[in-house]
Length: 498
Image (cartoon, rainbow, N blue to C red):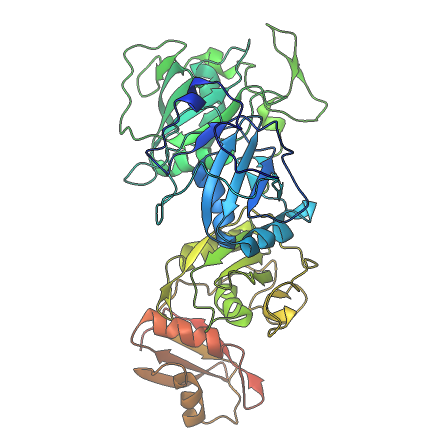
């Protein structure tokens, strides 16, 4: 009979495991994988077993990955790059496995590693419980036992904390760190030190945007092949670094002498790759690949949208709203969590424009949450038959790549794109439609304060001004592409004033 995972079944005698306190239910228990039972099972359970988890993965990372499918109650980070996550409901766990575990192409990527989820042999976890209503701990212990800094309490910072794992015999100094991180912005200072978790460096950029770009691009990658010198990158809570003298462990690039010509010639900057162009480390003779020849991780095109009123907003309403910012390829709504959806765009710029403009917008009394998804694409062949039988598959999954429902083409430059406003621009109005008929349609979902119907280049158009941005957005979601007088009217946000 399967037993709940407990300290007695976790055969780990490390100080981290033995000193684990049960006083704080939000902390992560770190144990070796149990040897008295298989790690995975075919029978569905609430507990999901993850393999190939990247070094430096935190509780927050796994909560962000799993919470769209349902409430997460327990998390255990195990040694050997494994983890256990327990959902509150079996249906949520099944939905997660159905979407992320069955199809290899949909396996999520966390910190640069593709993780492999499956059902665990454990029916229940007794350690690693999350306190009711508690938010993920940004300073949660990782697989290596360190406490990594997350975002500072004031948000993203211009100083990042870099942890270099598995340094072994390789030389990593301030020049190495500079060469890795300077492509993402202007570095002012670097301070390095050694901690039990490994070699660490504080890197100070000129501004927080540069630090954020470096953090997103480099966390989870490695300087050398075989995961040697892998990087974990987090925000620091410090506001300014102090460099007493320039050395191989600290540099101040704001003063003369902080940067040396030898830095440009340093061969220490590498990452794993399967390419044929190689260089050799002079100390070890190991063949390694230059960093600038390693292909970057593909830019994200899939958004995770949540906290919307699913009773008022279905797939078409989401399309009408998000297509304001680019060509939407596919939309999938989760059956178990109908207020969560994945939206895939034709390219990263479009997805980023939608995220920037729509994150936090209020619709039907809810503030929309928009973030990049861990998924690289939405599989249009993914089965959506499990769940409620009173709605068709098209209510949960639609492919718009070959339809005329998008506003823009896949390669177009969104010329008239703007942030949500309280004014809507109406076009493609049939000559047979009277102003009163148009007014009735546009006021059906929300009462406009004023409007104006006019002609431009012999085409009828209109502007409708609503009391609030949310009112206009709700009308846009429901009325765009509606057939009025034999023609589908087009509704978009406008910066014009009435």
